[in-house]
Length: 195
Ligand code: GLN
Image 1 (cartoon, protein in one colour):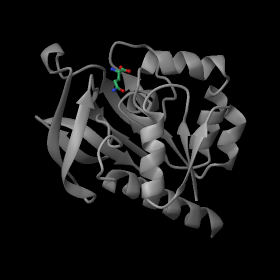
Image 2: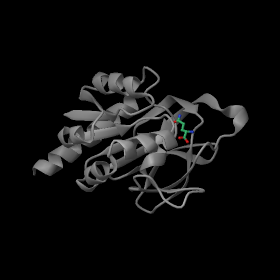
Image 3: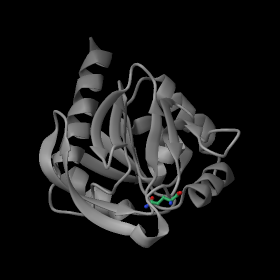
Image 4: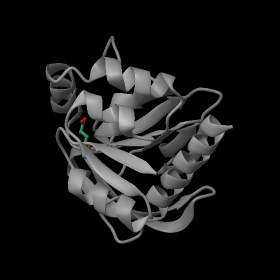
């Protein structure tokens, strides 16, 4: 099983480590053609507007949309969640725009630019040490979206079929349970594709 990490900007290496620790092969994706080989893709945290500029510069957008259309799992963390969302508060157009959620950027206040808190992630893990860095949150989720975690009443992790998204950085600690959950999503999608 091959899982790519979009390697344009942001916390790429940490995701690679976490994927390998979860028992899958990890690849840093630098060119759009490389996506074709992947069974799943992680879009890391970083800065969504910068990442978007690089996505356009290197011609990634059509391939990312094809990846989603093929039913392959995609996991967006922090800025990656913003890139997956169908709606971003304050913007007329989404980025990749595939996951049925509305997100708001930088929504935990300036005085709390970054913080760590323990979260229970429904059906995934408990007491997960979640690191938030200028994090977005999910303001609104479509009816097929399963809410996996909330912090202070705000949705911070969710899944819609092949799409997984979280506000925080799951790759920054030694607890790889969320990445392992995504690896299982990829395994299941791959199995289905073979039937
Ligand atoms: N604030 C960033 C953005 O809007 C996301 C921060 C992160 O990925 N840690 O893109």
